[in-house]
Amino acid sequence: MKLKKFESINVIPFIDVLLVLLTIVLLTSTFISKGIIPVSLPSADNADDIKVKKEVVITITKDNTLHVNKEITGLENIQEHILSLPKDTPVHINSDKDSKFETFVNLLDMLKKHDYSNVSIVTEK
Image 1: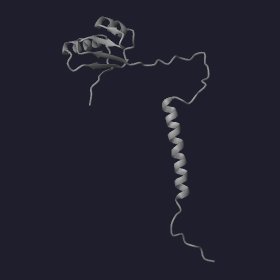
Image 2: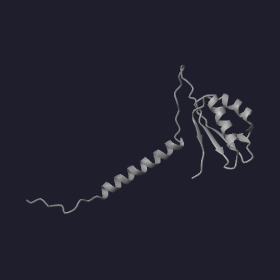
Image 3: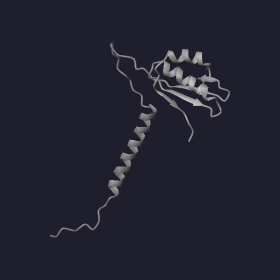
Image 4: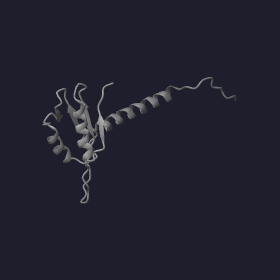
């Protein structure tokens, strides 16, 4: 009795398995990134609260007015608001290209004076 030689490998079942695995990975990664998967967390007596780092967006308009969250205006009011936040809070500065450079420097000086180091300047590509 002679064994029959295979001239080619049947890869269709292998491709089917790979497509199913790819589908599972894509579905679970989108659920995880959007936080849709419901989780019932256990309770603990000595649990620490997670501090959510919220970013602060400071906008300098064309007429050199400073805004934070469209509610707080003026350097003094912004300074009071920023001092209530942790020092590692991300601060993003949106500055109009026609605004005075002096306003921008005053803002950076205030942030540096209070030791805020996580400052980024938002630009357009």
